[in-house]
Image 1 (cartoon, one colour):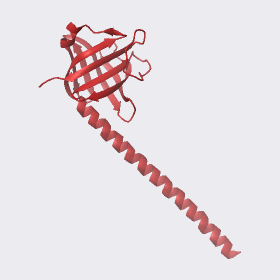
Image 2 (image 1 turned 45 degrees about the vertical axis):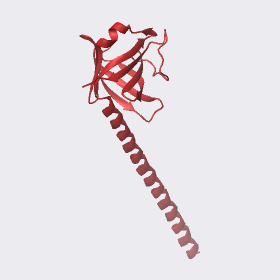
Image 3 (image 1 turned 180 degrees about the horizontal axis):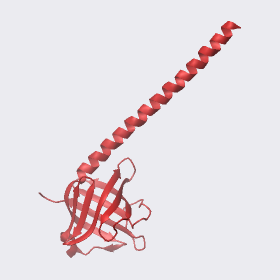
Image 4 (image 1 turned 60 degrees about the vertical axis):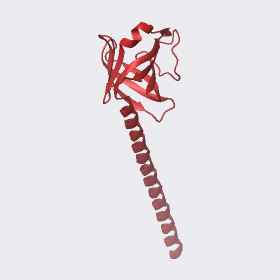
Length: 164
């Protein structure tokens, strides 16, 4: 009886130890994944830095006129972006990205401009020295694709890094 009791206690202790090791490994893997995600986010934010010129764009399915494109600028410093068309402020926002999603996601918290105080959910994709964004209207549902059709209340824009 004594030997059976000791054996049972050892088995319980081993199961507890195995559970603890499993939990510790899972926690370690989660931290490692978070660190990787953070590094990916930092890399994408670093690629967004600087001044960009609009190549093309549309809002709610309506193309932005070609004559307006040369005046459209996007400047990114840190996690803040400012979009202007000529002297007109379109938006200033802080942002976060999640490059682990497919498509990659970006969230704007607008700090100045017509939609100040609102949140815009979007997606983005890099292609060489261009970046494409698609955003929902303020407080709207995040787009799942890069389209801007009439009635969808989305903006779609393509930006090329400005020459220094």
